[in-house]
Length: 230
Image 1 (cartoon, one colour):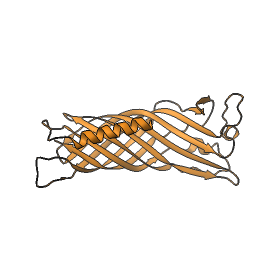
Image 2: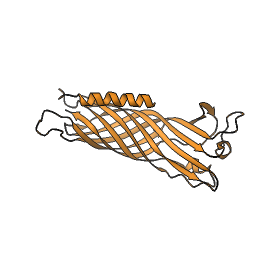
Image 3: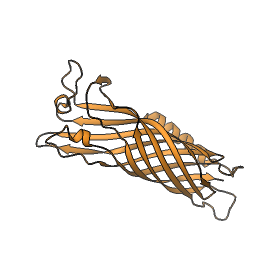
Image 4: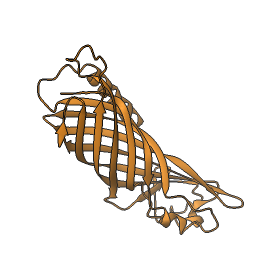
């Protein structure tokens, strides 16, 4: 996933930097960095880690993506990582991290060279990582056959993304009004809906049991990047 993310961002940057004054209204592109926060239902995890400090439902994160538009129809790809949280009891610790990748489709309800507003939907995988200093088989009621020493878990699920976004593209060259390229800022508000239950594994081998934990829920992101729209 790391190599795919790097490749997509490199392609998006090269396309965005080379965009000319496009011929049709609603055409354009954008590459962006997106910090923000997300609300995750951590109750399934907290109910299984008695004695540990509760894991907060508010996760901060960061990511990036690219967006291309043609006649107001938009397609994009985004990757987002959630900063880990550390919870402890008197002797041990547990770290919770998350990440997800999305492919987005949208349509601009309003689009000009300086402002775009569009709803979008997306679909992609979500991952949750749990790292424990103690054996997680007893703590989280998981099982991996005869292996009774599991200290890390990765949970995968499929997510759908429903959101709205607004972008403002600032002029890079006020003297050259034909050049629509420039720095862009925006905001995204949405909800990640789980489509499948979380499937757990450790060291690439299946694990049965585990909490119903996934990186889904409401999110708010700010975006900053570079783009051009007609």
